[in-house]
Amino acid sequence: MARTESHWWVYVLRCADGSLYTGITTDPARRLAQHNAGTASKYTRARRPVKMVYHEPAPSHGDALRRELAIKKLPRVAKDALVRSQRRRERA
Image (cartoon, rainbow, N blue to C red):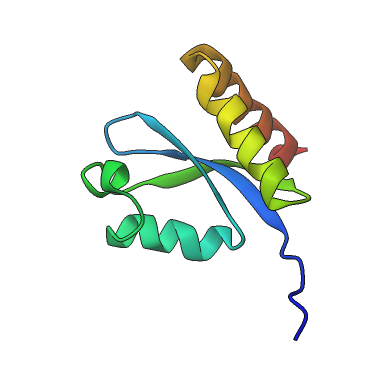
């Protein structure tokens, strides 16, 4: 049976302590629920509840991993600008 290619997403969560967490998934809603249930990441488990504040599609798993790494390397002010850009797009 051939495996179909899933659509990947890169996402950023804002944790209860104000920190940001970046990850990848094929199902943003499911992954957010896992983070809030404490079953997705040791980092977010101690910082619940979390809210998804940014997400963008990626065409492949490799592309998602590269974008995740690029976002993680950004300084905090650049990550905050990325989050603000998402809010502006959603309002438009």
